Structure formats: C-alpha cells, structure tokens
Image (cartoon, rainbow, N blue to C red; front, side):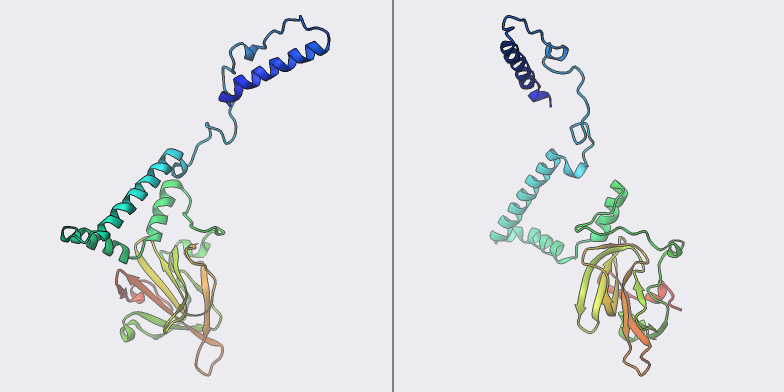
Amino acid sequence: MARSRPDEIRRRIAKRRKENRGNGSERMVVLPEEDEKYGFNQFASYEPGGRDEEIHPLFRKEVFFFKLLASICLFLVVAIMFRNQSPALDSARSIVKNSFSQEFQFAAVSKWYENKFGKPLALLPFNEKKPDVKNVSNQYAVPASGRILENFDKNGQGVMVETSKGSPVKAYNEGVVTFAGIKDGLGKTVIIQHSDKTESWYGNLDQINVGLYEFVSKGKEVGTVSGSAGKDKTKGEFYFAIKKGDAFIDPIQVIRFD
C-alpha cells in the first residue's frame, strides 16, 4: 500500500548497504532504483480487495457508521419519549406503538432489494433454486390440486382441500416465510408473506420443508399433505388461506384447485 512504501524502500536501501559492507565494498555508492527516486510507484497497481474494488453500498464504512449512529439516536429518542409520560407526547407514542404492532414487511423489503441490487435479501443462508418452469407462465402456482371439502363461506378464513396423502404443497407465490410451526386448530403450518403485502397460509401439513425467514420462489414445496381422518387412508387434506391486511379473502377468487 502507498503508506508503507517509503518504509519498504528504506529497508531495501539499508539491506543493500549491509550486504555491500559484508562484501568489502563499504565505500560503494548505492544508487536508488527507479521507483525509489520518488518514494513510490507513479501508478499504483490494482489489487483484488483493495480500494479500487467496488464496495457494496450497504457495506461502505462511512454509510454503515452513519446508519449505526442514526439508529442509536433514534433508539434514545424513543426511550426518552416513553420514559417521559408528558401528555404532549401521547400522539408520538401512539404512532410508535402502532408501528411496532404491525408485522414487518419482509417480502416487500426483499422485493425492493432484489430490484435494486439484483439478488434476493436473506437474513440466513439458503440454497437459491430456480422456480419450476411449468409455473413460470402462470401468475400463481396451485398449492396442490384436489377437491374442496370446506369452502370459504363456512369458516370465513380459508378452504380445506382433499388430495392424496403425502402430496407436496407448493407456495402459490414467492415470498418470505414468517411462520413455520404449530398453530392451534391447524397443526403444522407455514405462513408466507408476499411482496404485495398479502399472506398465504398452508395448514394441516404432515411435514414442513422450509425454514423461518427463508425466501421461497413460486412453486417451491413448503410441506406435504397430512392424512385424512376418514376411512380412506390414501387421501389427505390441507388448509389454504390468503390474508390481506387484517382480513382473509376467498382463495377461489385467486386460484382454482381442480
């Protein structure tokens, strides 16, 4: 690097003088090499990982420290706001509470990041896979083909679909997994948040094949269908719902299962 170059030149000159003394030529004049005349190379060479290499905008040191400082200041302001119970700050405290009571839009941020920088944003490492070619031409992928056992009008949330036991259940659209676990009344459930701020729910699963905060493409398998409670052990059923804001919408208005 440019800062250590003069020290390196001085060391090289001292080394040659020492070698000359050992050879009995102490009075020999040591002439500086071409690059030593000026103390550094006139044209700095490019080194991988050096200053010439393009740095990702999110990891520039100046930007990082500025955002860190701004985050600390924001945190302190919010803390002081809630410590001071002045009536004048009631409206500000209400805005903060409402902001934190809403779910963070992971999918919307991920979509913006992908459009801005060309790669999906992941909080944890994952293996990126291409979406199924057969689903690319369609706007949405069918989670699993089957017969509707319980329609939206019956429960006002989602539909129960009958299909073969162990069949794969696929994500109907790309998004980020915000829940992967057990839900009351639904058993093993996966919830995916999409860039249009909707959610898709996949319940009554026998197995979950995705992880929390994983980015999934349209048509990716999120789990498998669990067995049915009926006599036919070859049949299975799963729950599917679409939520927009605080309300569920009828999935039949978006996709067809048969």
